[in-house]
Amino acid sequence: MSGPLALVGEGEWSEPCAFDGELLAHSGGTVVTVLPTAAAYEQPDLATARAAAHFARWDATVEVVPVLDRSAARVEANVEQVRAARFLYLASGSAMHLLSVLKQTPLWDAIVAASEGGAVLAAAGPSATVLCDAMVDPRGGGFGVGLGLVHQLSLIPRYERWSNEKSRRTIQMAPKGLVLAGIPAASALVRSAQGVWAPAGEPGLRLFRDGQPVELAALNATSPA
Image 1 (cartoon, rainbow, N blue to C red):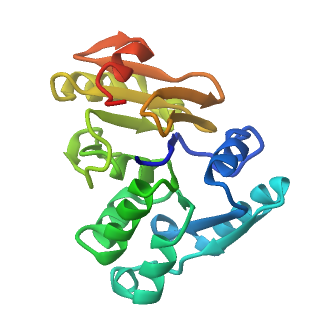
Image 2 (image 1 turned 135 degrees about the vertical axis):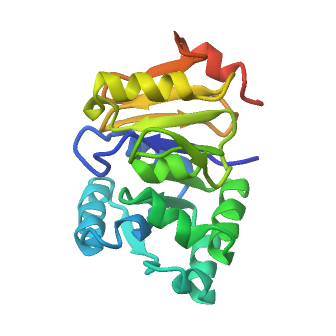
Image 3 (image 1 turned 90 degrees about the vertical axis):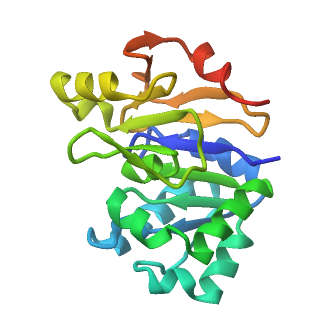
């Protein structure tokens, strides 16, 4: 059975993200393994320092997997570190860079194996979109192909920052039957190990399907238990 999955709108490792304490408890450990890949061009050291300070609230430590480019995604030590992790967290940053680094690499296989083995997996901002099979392109709001770990769901991260026109276009372009989640910063959509989705963190989560607002029940109806 896959472990819990958290799709965070952005603003990860900030005060309102108290749900991280619950995710840590689900992991059964006190170590959070952080992949700063998406932040490769956005001061990744600062991002991981924020993670360390945030998880210190729960007396947890952060271990960083130093993967900033595609060659590092093939280094055996990095792959094994990810495969053995019980709580994996993908930092926010560039969705396109993260996709290009992870696609068809041993590191991505290790992420999938860890999640399917029961590890907690969290991803923030544009990085969360990469986990979906239908991936929202933050540059123009259209859809591309993600890594496919999450099915029948896509998301607009940092939803509160999108203009009404841009979000309306994305909602209308979404493939038929796909649930599209608008997730604000410091908010998350969390799937339990039993396959049930629930909101966490700051309010403001919005769900759409076929161009219309829907309730959380619509997403849970598409998710296997």
